[in-house]
Length: 331
Ligand code: ACO
Image (cartoon, rainbow, N blue to C red; front, side):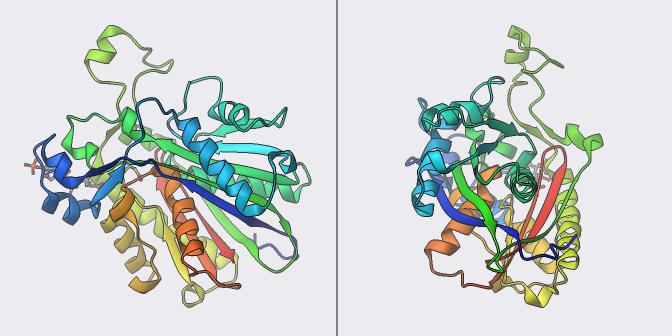
């Protein structure tokens, strides 16, 4: 449904954290049989940032959350709920949200995780919007930290070239100034779960010596299938969100697609007939940082002075589950 009244959810602060260490394609050429030319032409990635061995996902999240609070001009005491979207939790339980809550010295503010593949940040915005508009929470801190490099098989050239580590965060609250989230579309298809997963370490295949030897604790993916579904579903979700908001493709200032692969990004733009210069791309600098790609993109546009009041953003993502979702948003 389009939000008919003027009370909407708005982003009032953005923050990111990117680890210092950079791994280039030249570095990867020394680790697996690959080439800079193959990686750039098939994925668009030139370099990615890698977390330190002593860092956990929540450490990245705490840094991004602090930056978002500073950007909003708020202290943690002003927050009513901490939501964390991630695929690489510190621990299966407790939630990464609780580790971050502790890191932020957040007292007894409620906190929980959302597991929705690379679509997690958009799912998080949709959940936060419902809670804010219903009056359940006044201000929500949505944190999207990811550390896929710790569940990557560094001997598998088909996956290890793709991913990086990063975190983004947003402070969310109600507004009646005409800006904010206009519409959403969110979907999932669990029948396709096997195409992109980390098979072991849960209750289906508990950890044993054998699962470790068979490398079942690493991300596994049927890249071609993921690719095809991503392009189709991201296109559908984007169109549905625009329609629900009563907008046309021409109204879009920035298409902000999940940065999974430059060919998925370009194919989504083409499918939607959105000109290249309106399609945000930064995958060359970070690789696929999963839940963190969309907040990193919004932050980069904001810092670069490329967002004006009234601009229409179309956020669009796809990920493990499969899950996919899009949001039309007026800046
Ligand atoms: N370097 C050199 N050659 C490679 C590499 C590499 N890093 N990786 C694979 N190859 C080889 C394969 O072995 C294969 O060789 P063969 O023909 O001799 O068997 C050949 O390249 C083609 O392999 P494909 O897997 O068909 O290559 P494709 O063009 O599909 O690209 C890729 C693979 C990049 C993974 C692509 O399928 C893709 O990006 N899929 C989308 C999935 C994705 O982005 N997932 C991210 C996580 S999910 C998400 O964020 C939505």
